[in-house]
Length: 195
Image 1 (tube, rainbow, N blue to C red):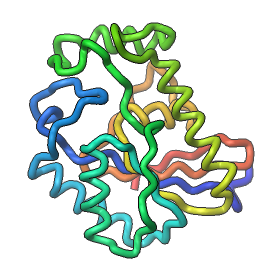
Image 2: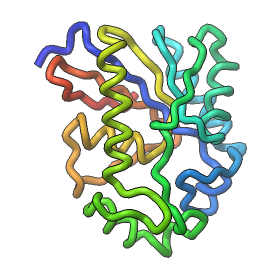
Image 3: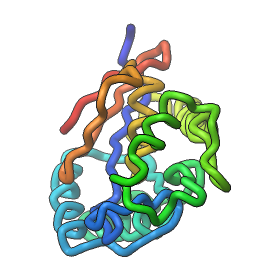
Image 4: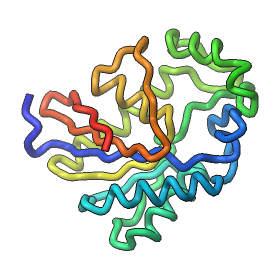
């Protein structure tokens, strides 16, 4: 595999929200960032200082856009963010707003059966297709470039599974201060590194 002149993607999850703090499944509904969410975003911004980005993409959900604004305030030289609905979290439908610990087994079942839709929401295959569409676009137009992507757990987890070979039975953990790098090879697989 050749990693020269390929896409280098830096991924940042939105800062902690009130919903995250309370253990609520949010999906495509939003709650504001907490003070810790703001603080962790600023710590992540410090990890981005050594990169020069050719493009910046961000989910259009407000918790991601609030995170993006904090990153831009810390580094005004960032390219203007392009907001993209493909980077939204999965739509949990009627399960949005419920306590995660009450429905964790339902979520796990849906992850291992991506053809199943959440009531009035999406199925895992919808999320996978959105992630593939986004990265196919980026691999085409950003060859040899470094891009920043601000999104959600589900997007990052799906990208790791689709491109870095992380299996469905392997847990994916994203720490509050984690910044990920997905370095694509010429065969469109990627190496995942936590910065």
